[in-house]
Length: 290
Image 1 (cartoon, helix red, strand yellow):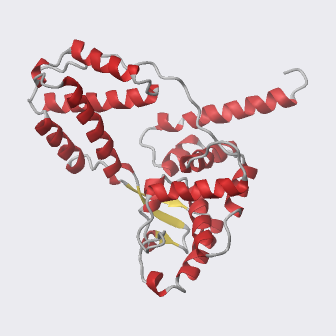
Image 2: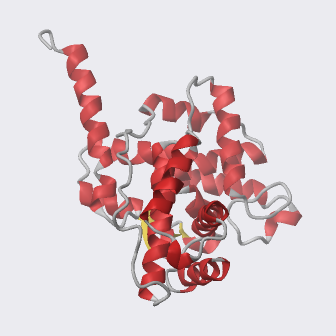
Image 3: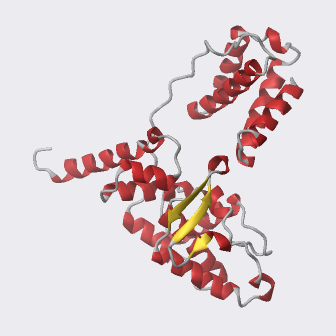
């Protein structure tokens, strides 16, 4: 099965322009699948085997969303095998994906966002951290999109970022004046260090290399500890907050879809549920006969 997995991953990389993060996840899921089925030939894998795989995933107490993601990987893999003629029938068609819980994304209030953005200090690291958080909230970027930014991707006059999203799709997205000022302040201070002066990468680590996604998470964790916000926040929380605050203030769903770089409008519609829940809480709290 190993050679078929490699063929599938090459297809994803070169034909579908899958990101390194996506390829890593698919490889991990498929190698675990290969270890489970062991010596069973590919053409002998049937619905019964796949149900055993599903039962094993459930026994590991994985979250339903994780199980659904792994099954999605398997479905894509078997579709590829059938399309390329390696299999005559697709055994996974009849396997049902477990029903997922509806989980609304966590969203920060405006005052909480302001606390985060105002917390970083005025030294080089603090200026960088503030520029990172301002950019995430101002443009709703994914962390992977943020870490790919170069200086050439910023139009300071037009207030626009060139962003490379999932599947290496390019889009232009607005960035606010406050975020641009934060970036400029960081770049001016960075320019004082000769070793960092000529880098074309926007956000650098201490060694002068491109900041990683994990490092961005550490930046946010460090700022959260200083603010004293009690609950769990990830960089994606700023993306959720960006979308929800736009909708709260009258932005239309299609525009928010474009800003987020979502391929399907249904992905963006989760934020309408968030907004409805927030309005319901306000109503229940404020209306005398709620």
